[in-house]
Amino acid sequence: MKGGEAVEGWGSAQKVQVVGKFPLKHSAVVKVVWSNEQRAFSVETYFSQSHSTVAVQRAFRTRYQIPPRDRVPDRKSILLWVENFRETGSVSEKR
Image (cartoon, rainbow, N blue to C red; front, side, top):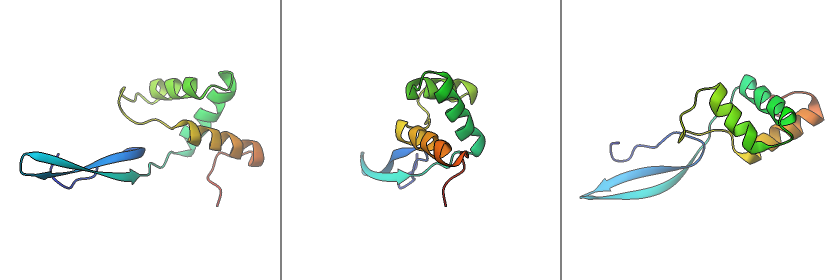
């Protein structure tokens, strides 16, 4: 990674700046926009897997072929999508 580049991902990411031999890390929040298809898959899986967010994350990783260290939706996002679905019948973002 070159100095000053931001790392894309979900949640708290690292921005690294190299000064001499020592990298300096800066926290940056990067937002990933999940598609409606991915949100719907997560909500369906949540209901079919006994309301387990961990099971949703595992199934999501398998379904979308995400490597072990890459980002998946966090617990808070999954629960927000489920709540939104219960209230509106849709997984689309509230506006």
